[in-house]
Image: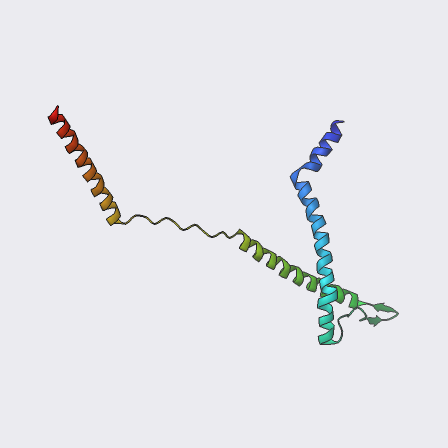
Length: 141
């Protein structure tokens, strides 16, 4: 019973859940990128070059045939998928930065020297007025 509880705690830890979500999201995103490369980018390359598949390239070496075209095709596919993935992540990061940017609140203007002096003058005037009222009330008593 204790082992089941430990296993449950292990599975529910944040790192494992984050990893699981990352794997599922990665698989879904891979399908999107693959579809983009196969159905959009590759046809454009075929339209420009006339051929986008090099997997049929071979070299005959004695009685054996070395099919290096599959290797070259895998490299080309990898580079195309990597480029699309790079551009997609760059776009997502740019959108996230825009979303995170919050207009800073304008800082309140700090009082100028003249405003400080005017405030001191007004306080002194109020203080002097209060003293004169106090001394007048003291004289009347």
